Image (cartoon, rainbow over all chains, first blue to last red; front, side, top):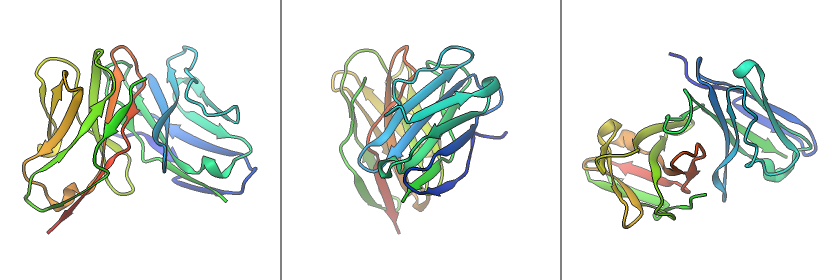
Length: 114
Length: 113
């Protein structure tokens, strides 16, 4: 079956521009996660959505970062006024529910801020 | 939140030799433990996980890991590696009841003929 998909696969932008990264989770998965993978920081949790509950935004590094999940499926991570330190691979994952469920990861979006 | 330490950043190994990747985590409270693999230009794929029960966990592609609560470790092993095992390996931990994964910095395994 189809896995988690993310688009674009690569994004190059200029400092100060806004970017949107998209994640399509596995159909039927209620939990969705965003992580960031960067040199020197490793993999960091950003945000978590579960069904219709309020998202856990505790990992977002600044108020320039936001995310939404429409209709309990597709999610968009938005970074406003991008900075060079935002350059990283942004990974999305989904799981059937939460807790012990395995998180299935997408291929990621590589963001480069010039 | 857990702190996860992968003791080796790079592990070169010859084909058909054994490999062990070390992982230690910070807290002895009840945890779930995972190993993920990331092949070049691909996403993370689950190799194996420990939730409860037997401390020796077997995963895909011939990998296994052993949970040691007293040493707060979850080392990954494979008795004989293949060229195709060349990848980056991540150890991850979550507290029971928490959905957030804390990842180690990763270990790059390079298998040479």
